[in-house]
Image (cartoon, rainbow, N blue to C red; front, top):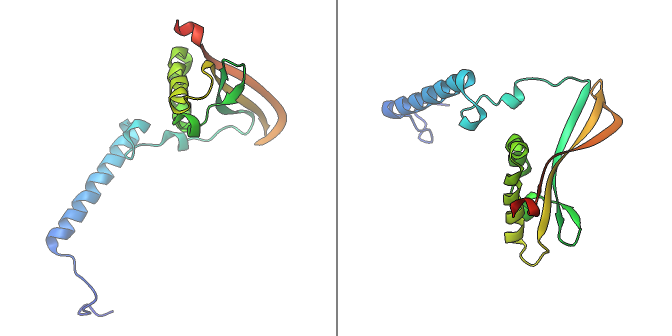
Length: 155
């Protein structure tokens, strides 16, 4: 291609300086947060969840949130019916375990979006753990209730 081609546009020196400056700022932020940051600094974050590998032998967990309504029906509380994304819940799981009263907000979110449904009386965070050997499931599975909120606790 010829530099004199009328279909090509040239970047002016000021435009080039702006682009280089923005690139340098982004690079500096990514570098700084790699050493001194946390995942909360998104999009300039170290993404620690990707920075280490898991053992091939041990337990792998899958977290879910379940509810029991006043009619005794048990069901999963999904993003579609509560507005809470699974990743958000898993990221805050430690807070819910430390203070199960916070699960009340998930029940309220469900009830606000489903006012015609029976009221929730219990919310649980349950982790299903799969035993791994050499990175493959052995078939051994356990379920652990990690946090529970009941409406009676709210009274």
